[in-house]
Image: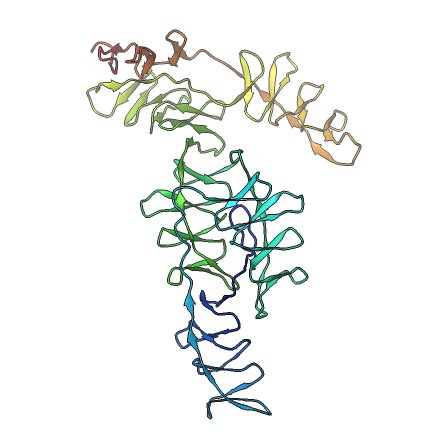
Length: 457
């Protein structure tokens, strides 16, 4: 089994002289872990000892337990047996606090999370092993816990007592000064965690970040464990069939933009994602807004779109005073062909047979000479075979794609001066002297420069 942990997942070997028992307790070096009557483990004060079946005593290596005579015997000797001692329980990992602490790697340009170890990767860059003071294996791909050695032939970490656990693979370290390219968006879209972390619910009801990918969130809402392990809150460890790992404290997640349902687009905080006519998402400058069925307009929460009159109709009979909101232009990610025609994000503008523009549903695509089809970037159009071929002549052919019509821009805004409001809105001066948008057509702007009323009120 392989445990993948945040940033650099590697099995860590402890450099201390303690022997970790399967229940998370520890025995001294040159002792042996033996199961007790309660299902836990005790310490036999002998190395490589024989654990007696009464779960109370143990015998010297090379002898057997004689329960009737309470002796340790073999063919030549009879020795008194030894009573076991209780193990020392390992405490949980202390709370990390409000931010991710880091271990600076030897190149002074890479870093790993706190309580991990920097290990060099095959390409000479640095990765992170998910335990402190770990042993970095010679293959530069794996690592082992402190106090063990790497057995690359059998893919194991071997301890002095000849117990073994599987090697773990490393993950790349984070480069200093670079923002994380990918963030893990937590449920609800209001918070995020660094890449290779897992969102876990906190006791406060908000989300925190566990420094393992695909982690197990513990039921106490304070700790988490690596993937494919379970939380043992009583002993403060993460359990699997072969490995014990300390519990990790979560850290608070950070606020972020509103992530749209396509998981590729985002709108600023306190706005709402609304689907547009071209199939992409735009941003309505109101929180929890109602997206109108024309895929162009939106209305405040608890109102309805009256497209016939280009108004937002409230749930109650009387129109209440509407709060003016800052002028924001509804935008989507598009690929402009010219000043009036565009294609959806991830597409390519190609000339159509009629001399206009069409969209190839591929990024940086090759536009075929028939003005009807297109091929992926790096391939060539084979008009005769109607395929996309490898330019090197390698026998790899792809089915070519048919273009779709491009979108022509339409003027759907109310112009204030240099700013604009969505169609069906009214420009009103705000307190700051800048323009703001009242979500009603031909509205009356109130003298407090904060509110507006419907026409005729």
